[in-house]
Amino acid sequence: MTYRELKQKHQEEINAFPFMFAFSNKQFIEGMAKLGLEPGDTDKIYDIGGGGFVRKPDYKALEDLIDRHQREIKEAIAADETGDGFIYDM
Image 1 (cartoon, rainbow, N blue to C red):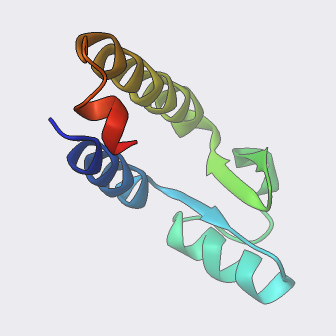
Image 2 (cartoon, rainbow, N blue to C red):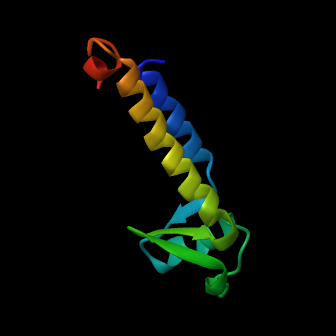
């Protein structure tokens, strides 16, 4: 897989993941609705920093997704023995 293909795959997985970003009260309310929660359900979410929030039951899956992305990048780098493929494209 090329660097561009792997980055696109990772971006699609991140875009499909159920989390939200909010930088205003209006965005927070809309984001909570997107997560299937009421604005007062703050005990059901984790703040992941940078204005991001995820439902508590989804937090481990988000960590696993990020860990897998990092592992896949490291594996692709290690597999590019000459440095003129994946590494070069980076």
